[in-house]
Image 1: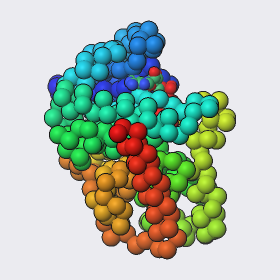
Image 2: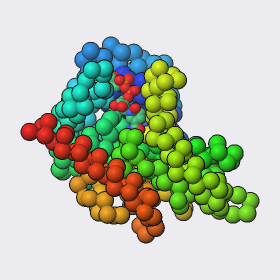
Image 3: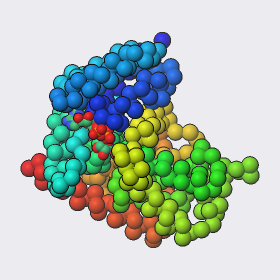
Image 4: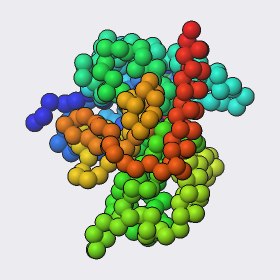
Length: 331
Ligand code: NAX
């Protein structure tokens, strides 16, 4: 049997945490043959809730689950972790300024960066889910300089999967037959869901989504806004923000990163920009990536038209603003 891998989930007493830890324990993140140890971190006011989640994990008797730690101590939580899924954060509450949220999260991610740097496994892979996800990941990267920067990413796979879902519904095809949509930029309403290179597999081979939809106006308007606004639509319907879909896509993100993307298929991940597609380095930006042997690489050479260029730059500009706001809070 394989050695267990240790997975940290921060904010594990929250609603995404509650959906995510059983998925990890069932093998949805690291595969059906990989035993796991789960470390769950939350803050003191939620310690009892967190302990309740631990009790349920024990009660579920998962064959792959080799250990559970529930703690409010960041050092204990980070100790020896191979995968860190950062879901904990301070959400925007009514009456709070954007600056207040930025400031609280910047200090949380600065502190947790140091703990990960000191106590996690040296090759630990980090996925930031908590919003503002791209900027929290950037803070984490800045304050954990000894973690290779390629190991720090943020979640835009939920947006990617939402885009696949919308195309699948529109064309009445199964979602697994749709691939190669792209989410560019920020995990926010300025993200750009791009279907210019997306395809559907049919009996007659791969067909372009643009051709099959045949309605450029829909693709350039309603499709984009539906994906951008999907989080808001879920809150309106459920009176709570997305949790099961967020948890599931966090598993997809780590799964594909560790195990690899299928041939001729890419996924979207928020990663440190290397200047590809003219996106300024120094931002964590969502790109199309393929993964092999535990490493992602940005898909190169895609043709970018003027419509896309404008949208890609607008979301980069928002990320630069978020970055200066977050860093100004720390100084
Ligand atoms: P909840 O408020 O249910 O859970 C958050 C948990 O984090 C709470 O239990 C809280 O006590 C804990 N927490 C706060 N500060 C902490 C700290 N310093 N250390 C450890 N834990 C801490 O929120 P939930 O619905 O689970 O969402 C979690 C985060 O995911 C939010 O920031 C949310 O905005 C973000 N999302 C990101 C998505 C993405 O695609 N990137 C989609 C879903 C989600 O909205």
